[in-house]
Amino acid sequence: MIEYTQIKRRGRLLTSRVTEGMFFLRRFIGAPRQVGSVMPSSPYLTRAIMDRIDWDSALNIAELGAGTGVFTRVLVQKMPEEGRLMVFEIDPALKAMIEKEHEGLSVYGDACELPKIMETLEVSRLDCIISSLPFAVLPPRMTAAILDAIDASLKPDGKLIAYQYSRHMKSYFEKRFESVKISFVLRNLPPAFVYECSSVRRKKKQEK
Ligand SMILES: C[S@@+](CC[C@H](N)C(=O)[O-])C[C@H]1O[C@@H](n2cnc3c(N)ncnc32)[C@H](O)[C@@H]1O
Image (cartoon, rainbow, N blue to C red; front, side, top):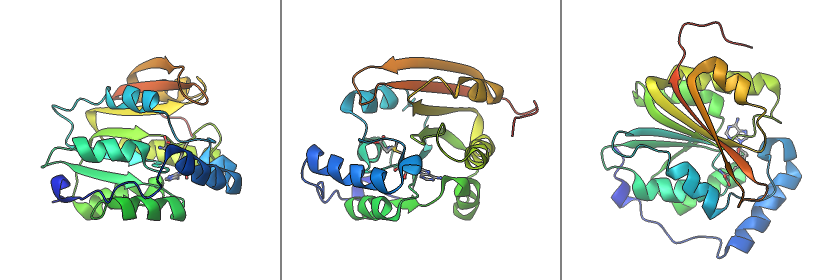
C-alpha cells in the first residue's frame, strides 16, 4: 500500500512554469504525435479535470499520459491514504522527472499495459481514469488498444475523464460509455474539450 502522505514532494525540480514549459516543448519537438501538445495543461484545465473526480468514492485511479506531471501533483495531494494511484507516461525523460519529483509513486510506461500492471498489483478495477493522451494523433491501433485497456480496467460505474483539443473522440467514447458529457475550457493553450464518460457499455460490439 502506498502512503501518499509519505510521498515527499522534493519541490518542483523545474523551478518555474516557463522552464517546465520549455522542457515539455522540447519533448514535443522530438515526438509531436506522441506528446500531442506544445505546452503542459493550464491550472484552469487542471481544475476542470480534478473537479470531475468524485473524491468520496474514487480510491483506485490511473493517470494516462502524465507529461511533466501537472495533474500528478494535484492527484498525489488529494489521494486518500487507502487509495492507489497508477501513473503512466511513455516518454522516458518525462517519466524519470515524475519519479524524481514523487519518490515512491508508481510510474509506468505505455498506457496499453494498464490491465497487465493492474493484474501484477492485484488491483481488480479502477474507479477513475484520467487521460491526457492525444488520441486524435496517436497511431489508430494504439488508440484502439488503449481504449480497450480502459474498458477492461474500469468498474462498470467507473469514470473516464479525458481532455482533447477537438470533439473528434465523441463518437468513439459514445460507443463505449452510456454517458459522455463534454465541456470546454477556453483558458488553456490550445483551448480544450473535457470529456466526462461514465457507465462502461460492456456488451455492445466495439469499433476497432
Ligand atoms: C498532451 S500531453 C499531456 C501531459 C500532461 N498530462 C498535461 O496535461 O500537461 C500527453 C502525454 O501523453 C504521453 N503519451 C503518449 N502516448 C502514451 C502512451 N501510449 N502511454 C503513456 N503515455 C503516453 C506523451 O508522452 C505526453 O507526455
